[in-house]
Length: 72
Image (cartoon, rainbow, N blue to C red; front, side):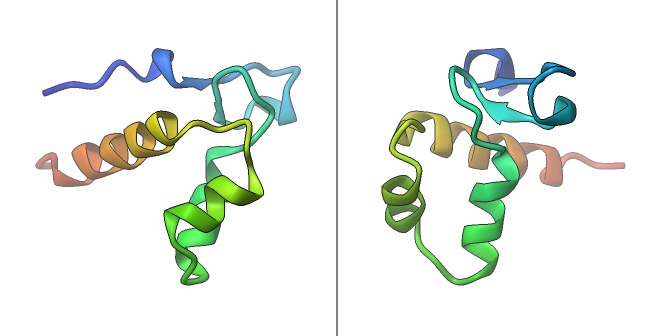
């Protein structure tokens, strides 16, 4: 399965220096990862960033899992 990241992520050099953000927001995907590294759950992230949908966050996590599971 290959996820189409353009449906839930965007990159624009004029938005946060081109960092990957959740589509339709200015919320960097790194914010989700930082929350998880800090021990927060998905609910805490979604509460802190209400413009990000659950579907977007889950899709980003699924994409990360897919990329990490690919052989070198």
